[in-house]
Length: 625
Image: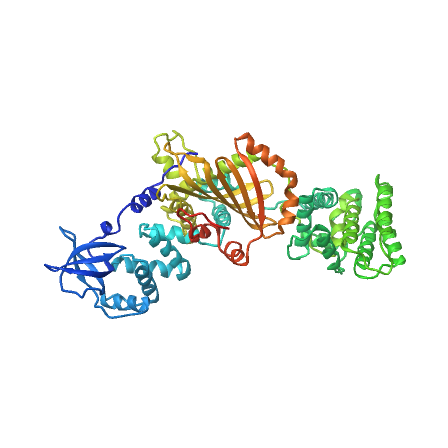
């Protein structure tokens, strides 16, 4: 992988290597301590952690701290004293006093900016205070202060572009969400074809439902049948995903307990709906009750036994088992299966085996309830053209997610994912400036989102569109700022909207290690953090550590480690083989749940790029998750 440099990165790296004292300009103000007075109105000061010798306009007291202003840089640096040596305990008080001395209005923003600069040893000027105060007023104090703190601590250029980029990085809205919102706005306006086309290539054409009621019904029935198969005969990961879909339908909180326990909780929380089967379908497709295959309407008697099957299942779960309830459940099952269904006899034999395991006068246990529920779900799917309405009745809900994306896992190829990620980075245009300045620039560079947004921003466009474009470009620029070098270490931070199979959302990658002399990353010794917002696991951090091409993975997710380990058993061999094909060896995979503090910081409202900014070990120290 070639590491391209944007103009932002080159500016940051140039500034990082400079001495703070050498960067002082005439008129700038800074805090310093007088260590020793010398003849000829000279003094030895400590500023920015180092000693300097300078000429002073007035005599001072050794050991005193003062605010100095650079009067001249011709020859030896000449300083004048801005403030006296009045003792002040609080930095905000010092800031307010300095502002009054400089005749700058004392506002909340000006005090915060000045106090933070004093605290972090940052030189000030009238212009920087006024500009910084305006930036804080626009961005808000919370995110603005964190952006400034990062800029000061990394000696970044104090410019509005850098500030706005870092503020954009702290936005809680995903990059995918920002891009999609802008895409829909541009489509509605219809007069910015190039920018719209670039977004469409990255995100896909925006969807608008032009389907008929009949086609929607066919879609939802197919999904229902697929869901029933996953729940009954799928792998563990497919069953877990299917359970999460059912809990979404029922507005139940997501959890990652074992599958039988979750299915039992679904049954026990099941409420009888007062809606008719026909109204269930109508509520979902926003049409009048429709006619389905073979001219059977949704109020056909074939769906009525499903209601009884559900009610008897709930009774078996929450009340002591009686022979009458078992008989009613078996009769409802018998009536729910079409007479000509090829699996009718096998299903009836299965229900007999399961009910024979029940103990009279004792409620069924979770494992038994789960098995009966899985069987009932399979039976609901024995009429495919009515699968959705039968399953809605079985669940006791009048809302079935027709337009929900398919979240059941499918087998994907790692090479395909890698290609899709590379395409997403290229279409987004993260390296747009680096490609333009490269000697190997292609003759016909493909249009990318960043390129088109930059063009858009110089045109006369509505203010909301300009603001949205600026925030997206700022988010992209932040990746370059966070990727700046520090000594021998190189850190690359990349974030991209990604769509592959059932996944859609942001993928954030932070690579840290050494860069080879040829400009490529050292893939033998490095560390890679992946931040991914998963459909079921939500905010997940994958920590990959590589030492001499030996890889260890730590996966942090809000789920029981034992369950994740069990779900991943069948994929470990494939993972090892794929790594060995590229000359790597897997030493182990460890699953962890975040601590309370980590859950708040990493899995709460803090976005991935803000996590990267706030990591204590951002420059040169390993991050502990």
